[in-house]
Amino acid sequence: MDHSKKLISFILALAVMLAMTPALAFTPNVQAAATPVDNESELTSAVAGGGEVKLSSDITLANTLEVNSGTVTLDLNGHTLSETAAVITVTGGHLTIKDSSAGMTGMITNNSNSAVKVYGDMTPGHTSAVDSSVRFVSGNIDAQECGIAVFGQGAALYVDGGNISGRDNSAVGGNGTKNASADKGGYYVEINGGTLTGNTTSTGYRNCGLYHPNAGTVIVNGGTIKGSNGAGIVVRGGSLTVNGGTVEGHGTGTTAGGTRYMMGDATATYCGGIEIGYRTGNYSGNGDGTDYPGGIDAIAVNGGTISSDHDLAIHVDGTAAGSAHSQGQHYFCHRRRFLD
Image (cartoon, rainbow, N blue to C red):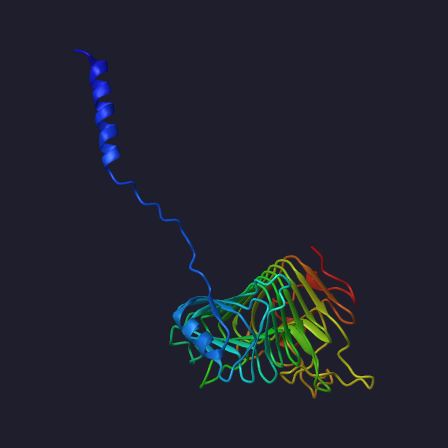
């Protein structure tokens, strides 16, 4: 039997069959083009439809922009988005904010409130499942109160880059409310990069870069967090893990006459790098405070650079000072830093 002839016949038959078969279509994974918008109506409609939305001009909103479902990417594209109430609220949706412009000059700004608010489940006992998130990649956020605020279980914030500032409060913050009517704890905040700056305009007050007042989780892996005239991070509740990044406290916590300045939550501050717990006593520094209702959980400083101009790099106060959370190896002298 001539096997070579059979093999040649098989190859020829296969070639004819392949020639008669339509080529398989190759569909590349092409991302849908961003939807350009230049007014509020177009922006609201595009956000409701999901996908990527790209500003083509500055927009001043008459109403808060709501992301209540789906996944949306907002590209500031070098433009400014503003409103007098919260500019953006996210409840049950997922929003990524970025700026594709060469100079990364895109801005979300607010002159009377927080710029972006992320809402989870705020019911007592957290009985309703709400999954909401904001990821801030690049661009700028500047607001009279918090740049970005997070409330309730299921609310998550990820900061990968860009600049966030609060003019008279923290750059990023939560709310300490936990009672029979509402529980605004349970949020998750992760800082991987960018710069968070707290500023102060009200006389007699100080600020912080990140305010953590309730049950919930804050993880710092990178970036810079600072109070321009206040503490870097203030912890009144929940857990904090610092793995990297830079945390800075600037300014002094007392007036020339010795009266202690207040934080926005009406408790005293020292302008430390990281402040854990708090102290009452008409802000004079007399008398230990009790924990906020959410309670302070585990505090771990594994790396990073933490400093204060005029106070401890890490300042533990109130009832937290006598707990397992105050770890002696994390205490540093005046103006010393904790380094990687």
